[in-house]
Image 1 (cartoon, rainbow over the protein chains, first blue to last red):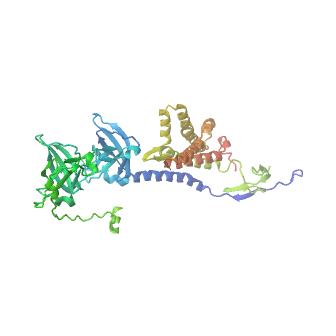
Image 2 (image 1 turned 60 degrees about the vertical axis):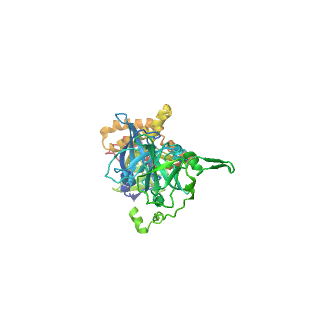
Image 3 (image 1 turned 90 degrees about the vertical axis):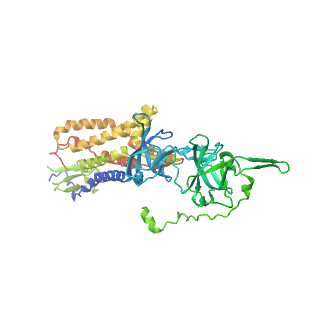
Length: 306
Length: 201
C-alpha cells in the first residue's frame, strides 16, 4: 500500500442482465411488416380489367368501384388498348367483393345525368365519377366489357308494345298512368321494321298488370290539354307536372274487359283520350304481390350473410 | 498495478478488480454502471438499426395519409408526394424532400448496420471509418422528424375540411424516426477503432 494515496473505493460487481430481449425489437418490426403484408393478402381481392368504350370522368388511383353505395375497389390504371378502340381500366377489388368478378357482372360508369323530368348521379359532380356494378353469377373471370350505361333492372312486370305515329315528348322513363297513378314506365323505343311507326316498349309493374286487358285503350297523356268551349271558357289540364315536360302515357280498360294482356301485346297509342273513356270504371281484381321482406331478415338468414 | 476507472456519471475514481464473465461493475458512490464504451453499444445499435431498416420499407411503400374530401378519395405515399412535387416543377423542394426523408435515413441505417456487423474484422477498419465519415456528412440532412411533424400538422389542419386517416405508412415512419434516434444514441464512435482482442468491460 502506498502511503500517499488513500484507499480508493472499490467498484461493486453486479450481475449483468440478459440482453436477449433487445432482439425482440427487430423481431417485432418484422412481425409488423408481416402483419401488413398478410392484411394486404387477406383484404385484397383480384385485379380485374374492364374495357370501356371511353373512360370519361375516371381517374387513375382515385376513382372508386362501388356496389350498393359501398367502396369495393379502386381504379389503378387506365390505358388505351393497342387497337385504340377501348380503354382498359385495371381495378383492384377488395376481398369482400372478390365474388363480383364473375361472368355476367356488368360494370358501368356512373355519371351525372340530366334528363327532362329526372336527374341522376348528381353526387358524382362532387365526388367524381365512379364505377358501379351489377353482379352476375357465372364462372370466375378477370376480364369484363364495360357497359355504356346502367343495365335495365330486371323488374318483373308486364312488357307491352305501343305503336305511335310520332314519338312526341315521350322518352325512356316516361311514366304510364292508370287513373293518374303511375303503374309503369316506358323503357325504350325504336322505329318499326317498315319505318312507318314508332314502337314504344313499356313495362307495367307486376301488381298492376291485370289492369291491362286486350281491349284497353292507351293515349298520350303528355303536354297540356287546352279545351276552349263557348260557355265553359278555357279548360287547361295536364296529367301531372312531370308529364308536362317528359310526356306520359295513360290507359283505361273498358267495363266489358277481355282477358288480361300477355307479354309483347301490341296496342295503339292514341293521340288523346275520348270523353267516353273517362266514364269507364271497371272493377278489376289486382294481383296481390307478396310484400318483399327487406328490413326484417330472420336471424337465421343473417348468419348466411357473413 | 491497480485498474483505476472513473465513473462517467459522478466522476468518482475507483479501483476495479478482475471482472468475472457475465457481470458488470457499478460505481461505489452512485451505483450506476461503469462502462468503457457505451453500454452494449454494438448490440443496441445493431438491433435498433435493423428494426429501422425493416420498417423503412412499409414506411415508404404504404400510404402516409388517406384523405377523403366530399367523396373524393386519395392516398399518398412519400414517393408519390415527391413525384407530384416534381410534376408541379417544385424541383428544389422535391429533391430536398427526397434527400431528407428517403435517401439519407436509408443510407444512415445501412451504414450503421455495416459498421456494427464488421466490428470483428480489423481488416475492415478503414471501410468502417469511411462509412462513418459519410454518415457524419449526411446526418445533418437527415430530417425525418421534421417531415413527420409536417405530416402530423397537415393531418390536424386538413381534418377541418377533409376526413384524414393516418395510413399504415405513418406508423412505420414514426417507428423509423424513433428507432434511428435510438440507434444514433446508442452508437459509440470509439467502437470504430476498438479491436476485438482489446475489448474491455
